[in-house]
Amino acid sequence: MKIITEVIKITLLRDMVLNMFGNFIKAVIDVEKEIMAIDGELHADEEALLLVNGSKQENLWGINIYPELPKEERVEFDSMINLRPRQGNCTRSVDDPEVRNKIIKIVNKLIEDENSA
Image (cartoon, rainbow, N blue to C red; front, side):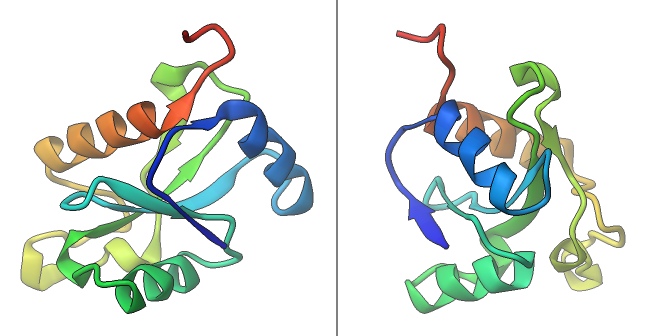
């Protein structure tokens, strides 16, 4: 598992999926620190890594990233760690559109596509 604080190339994620789930990689995004943990078997493992490194649980959201898909379709909001009724999120998705948009912006900021300069 790794905490990503600076830009990484999409090719790194493509290599990682071959060792994990085949077509996606799990990630947990800290929407406050604008960082993410990747390459864990479970979102809960990535969440734990971020927590021991100073993140707050209410800022952490689990997603799946599909590196082969276009940037606009790459992020899937589906994780058990997203179930948090006390924060008004009663599904495995991320119900708040503002939080969803922030997650997408963070992912796009941290992952560089081949055609990006």
